[in-house]
Length: 313
Image (cartoon, rainbow, N blue to C red; front, side, top):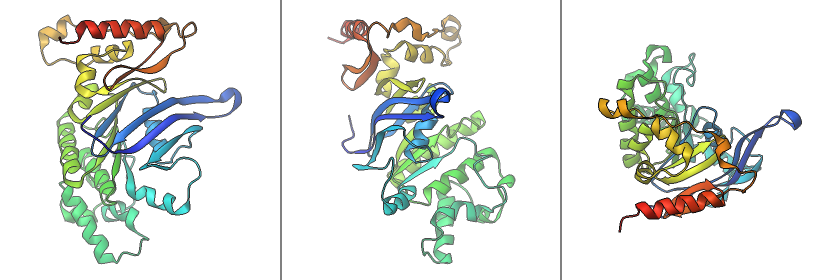
């Protein structure tokens, strides 16, 4: 791993909604570390629980059990008031829908600066920071006096990024930040996020259902299915040597730029019934260095055998 310092950690995180018979477990026993300066990806289908994890980290949702740590401090459950006040500055979120995440009745200068208001800063300093944040995301300072409905979807998402950026955060949770945008705009936003990561020393938790996007921006990827991480590895390792059948199914659905390859491609259909977890209890194990998979004992032996057969001599 090229990273040394874990900045964020989830430990056996469970998140549920409702009670008794109506109880729904959205996240099951999720553990991962995010290291300083990396982009860690969570990928899975809609409803897999990836957004719930992000919202639990920033304390929108309550963790049913398990813990979330930021720089060694627990930030889930009841925490000290001072830490609760600090967290929004240190961990920020970019939301999926740039149309719904901005207050239509407020001007851009207020939307972007809302997080730093009430912190004793003079108006000139607030205006200066708003201007700098807008310039950082490629928008003109005079845009500060317009309303959200005057902007395109891509510009709105840039405003959302500026709103997060003005807080000088250490971690940004990007929840499907390009899924609502036109294809031609997506690359611009991804390039902007990559540039800001270098310029501001950011760490990203990048949430998406699109593996082709994740390959472009992520250093490591965790694949999540029905609230549980089933595979985790460095990005190129995951693409070159997927292990879990669900990961293989996701990769088989990724469009290929070569028409001949796309024509011959066969989609893989995944069924959880194939695992027989009622007979052999599964666990999250390391199959190769820094490559983890959720599997039972017979599957572990199968995966390890397949790895050793493909391992370069």
